Length: 316
Ligand code: ZN
Image (cartoon, rainbow, N blue to C red; front, side, top):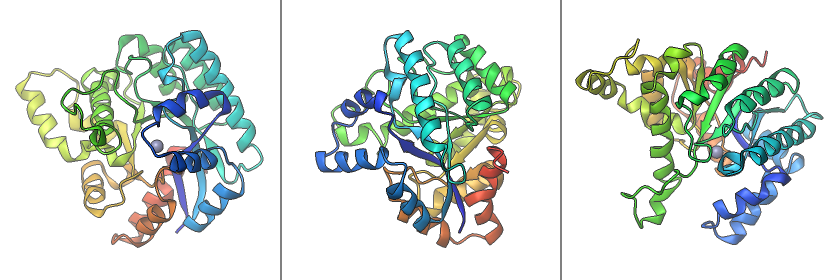
């Protein structure tokens, strides 16, 4: 089955220093193997994509990147370096690779300008943002210039998991729950809800947000979000579920299980659900075999595997 994958990562040499400490809890041999795959744009990656039926991978810098940089000028400078590096690496294979921009929301105006440069000049498909930027979330009023440009460019913002600004006290010493198992989902789902309840989609109704992991549990919660928004007297133009249906798209990165997939399709609509492999962190073979074999009508599978992403990212 022909596929487009949207949450596929690479390493820019200038950003290595952010990655190693953020992944120190992974055993060294696994970390080194990931590092080799992240740095490869050739045979290693392409042969894995071929075997999985992935025609196009949209590449993004591995988390956290400059989202965790404390010095704003450094973050702005390195985002540009990273994007130029990606553009150079994917240029020989426009048939197989596309890019998401790395942007420094520590300076929202600079992030907007860099997004525009990446979309208009480098041909990128949007931006992928690794959670909060040095403690700043995307619903803050200072972020308006960035969202304005997202809307103007009719492009997509993929919100990717990262560690919270402060460790979650409920998770406490349960190290195994802090990150991909649970903590990142809580952090990223909450960040997305801040955009909804903070009125970002009232201010920018055409903005498109993408989440991995089949929406970080949000498709499961639509009814409850609407019900409790009424109880707490939330005054938004639409019900919370409507923003999630109209402004959100999700990919199945790292969620190769039929039950949440069916829930996402039912809650958000088939046109808003897409494939992803999260290379090299998930097994690309597992992701692809799930997509190929999941028990769904063929036209739905084609929409998820290819057509929805092609339309959203304007790939044809
Ligand atoms: Zn990822």
